[in-house]
Length: 177
Ligand SMILES: [Zn+2]
Image (cartoon, rainbow, N blue to C red; front, top):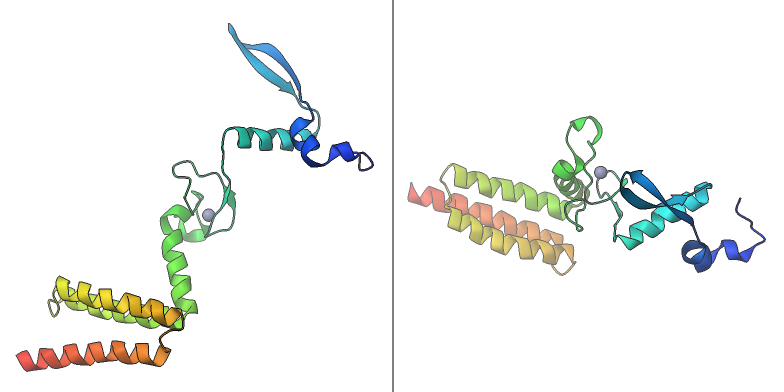
């Protein structure tokens, strides 16, 4: 058991220098492997931790469900591969979308941006707007959104700018008819 009175049971010594009982044995003849005898749960956790450091195993917290996971494809993975709730989909498949939706729901700037984005994008599908026009709109709308999020552009002004885009497009449409 961990001896609280013994300072050698804590700190760097405890984690890195306290020896494990190691021996060599035949695992699958004729292979010889280094084996460890571990009697305590503390030593097991310590062993796991040290081996993870030794093999550069990273643990990350899933940005969707909050569980810890070991990224096996990319070290910069943000979502785990567990299936999420009732969705039947993995966090890695839907995490980014759910996070975006939460962000939109929590922030009126994102909400108004997304609504206008959808509206403008739908116009490209109905050929009322070319793809190039849409890209141009998007290139103006996203930096303005970021300015607004950063508090450099008042929310009302951003909404007014987006509205002007809608009125202008509607008028252009009427003029060409
Ligand atoms: Zn997850």
